[in-house]
Length: 265
Image (tube, rainbow, N blue to C red; front, side):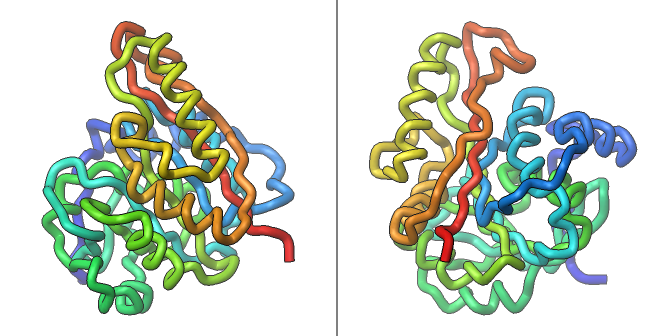
């Protein structure tokens, strides 16, 4: 069996039981008609599902009917636990969730392994939730796919963009950036801060987004920089905080979901 990174937050951030997990995912992504235009990239949050699941579900609902056509997901999220220079690929050959194993795309990993900002290490991945919580959503919507999991530490927007350009591919490749928004403000202050962040995201202005506005501002900035150069379109799907979903309102975390589309040929 290939070396796999075991699930680190199943049973805490989302259900460990596969049947219960699928029930929650279905609730967050109610069945509907396949969307007319399929996004090239998604931006979605990474908290426990009770808090951010409804917001993430709005993003992943945009993949309705995409199973079998999206074969590879480039998944980027911030490093919360391990200090890191650059972007880390895992040594692991697969990632485990209660819904099964997702293989790491070896060819894609090889395509970026020579870049100086890319390191190969399981250590930043082992405790990290920012990537893991997205995998069940992707398994539910896409079925079989491979993943290029990248934990992002201290890097520039251009270093992230360079990695994305190498992996961009065609309609078989989806990019997902994992980020939450403001942290631990009261509900009213969070709404104000997150509205400003949303405006910067939708204007494709990553330079206006700091660490206090989005914990994944570096992978987010890399995607937005590339999207601006490519003339992509962006659509807001949701903007809420934990005070709107399941938590108290005196101290909240902000969540947003966006879809990005390539310019028409």
